[in-house]
Image (cartoon, rainbow, N blue to C red; front, side, top):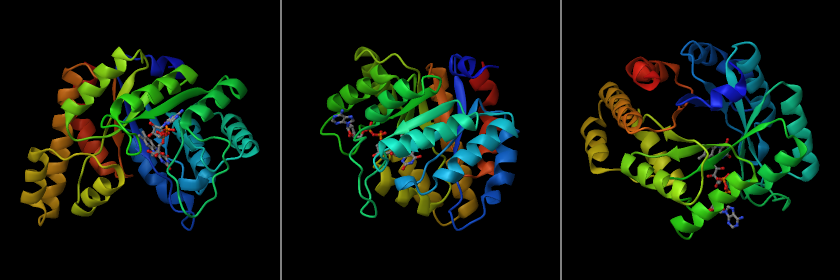
Amino acid sequence: MKTTDIFKKKRVFSFEVFPPKRTMPIEKIYDTLDELAVLKPDFISVTYGAGGSASAYTIEIASKIKHDLKTESVAHLTCLYLSEEEAREVLSRIEENGIENVLALRGDSSPDFEPKNRFCYASDLISFIKENNPNLNILGACYPEGHSESPNKIDDLRCLKKKTDAGASHLVSQLFFDNSLFFDFAEKARIAGIEAPIEAGIMPVVNKKQIERMVSLCGASLPEKFLKIMNRYEDNPEALRDAGIAYAVDQIVDLVTRGVDGIHLYTMNNAYIARRICEAVKTIIET
Ligand code: FAD
């Protein structure tokens, strides 16, 4: 299937992985990638370190996914700390490596780096790619609960519209645990004239530390049902893992039943969890 056809499918099912730390060998992720590719996702996306710290690995891993594992790949790219020259250089490396899709992001600000002030928002990078690398398919991020820096959801939707107007053809959402928030957001996005498919970001929560980290990082609201499950099994790692998988499966079944455009699974590089979820939902997603 051609890349463009994958993104036109009725419903996309994709995975996200992150590169190993630069102090670790890149091969550390290879077994995980092998196991994920066997599950036949429509694509696997590879995150880009804050400030560009994992950039080399991102491209190398996205290239391996595409060429060795014959699975479509998406390279994330953050722009807050990129100069125009650096952006040109990274984008040509992406194209030279045969990668056809970029998830264009602003990235979070970090006290460790000096912003280059060329690309202040993701939409700036999207416009730049559209003009300079017109063959790349551009994806953008979206936030069902609103982005943490946004004064309100309406402003956030206006900014999202700028991203699709600039050339993002496909959106991937931040993780969430309350499907009603996602549907409300998706409906408002359509009313705002945003027509790009919106993939729902699902993160199976499989340990207690992960919950605390996630809430502090992305501020996702935690429904009572979710909290009850996590509290009930917090001292039993295996039960907590199974409950986290079951919760994610339940979310996916509901999303698919109600016509979601796609499911983007934040795998946390855990192929075992991804496999269990795939086994539970594959036929549902394909129906
Ligand atoms: P933007 O779309 O630029 O939005 C950032 C803020 O600015 C929002 O509040 C928005 O409302 C506002 N805004 C946007 N445009 C304008 C404008 N023109 N004028 C005024 N305000 C504006 N981070 C990483 O470091 N590496 C990754 O690989 C990575 N992958 C991600 C994948 C997904 C699917 C998601 C949802 C997030 C990911 N992130 C990643 C996190 C992301 O970088 C942060 O959430 C970041 O704070 C915002 O990035 P963005 O591209 O959404 O920013």
